[in-house]
Length: 121
Image (cartoon, rainbow, N blue to C red):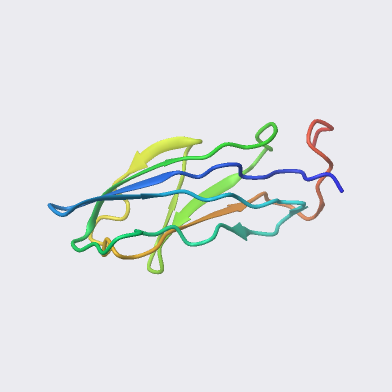
């Protein structure tokens, strides 16, 4: 079975107000169907942390061309931030406890099975 879209690497760096930073990364997901969301495993600090998030940096890679309409969000339990590219930073998690885990959620609008990468639509 050919995989249509897979997240290869998702490094994430979280800076906490006055308390330092943490970094985590994970392997990704495969999206074979439109209209179905897929979530990464939780990304979280490996050591005890305190304080609140101030800045979150992300980067992800796809194993093929970016599909039309791909929507990628980074989510805590209390909010989601839409990511506007394969890398960047956001202050959208300001005041979320630095100990909170984050997940990346991907979806492509529509319905039905996706064609393999490189075959279009």
